[in-house]
Image (cartoon, rainbow, N blue to C red; front, side, top):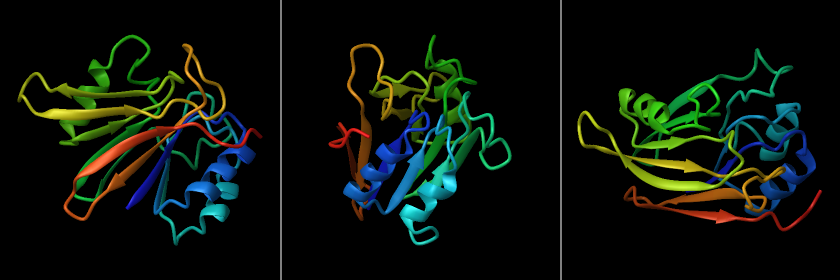
Length: 172
């Protein structure tokens, strides 16, 4: 299963659509600050054929009714916690994100907001379990010396997975 993980497109829907066309994902996740009509993305994905999750970011003012602050779901034998990250204060620490994921018994936590790609396993202090923390970066406005980026998670039938960070090939 090919999972496309994006964040912080900030209205650059043409670039987002070109990434979707190029990657042809089996599952799509946008971690907030889309700042555009999600129906355009859903149309490109062929929803409901390609399932998707959209998270509300701190700049998603007009989409308040359509987007959630976080989502928890199972996929490929893993339990995911998804958020934008601003409510978890990820600019300062990943502790709140880690604890939110752990409380919901998730082994993968996805976030955006910082516009910087991140990939790290963190240990939960109260039980010693590990949570894989992933930020795909920003497809539109990278920060911290990073390039525009998104992540591809490939999940095998046995639940094993790998994560690859990619740079969009088209500039919109």
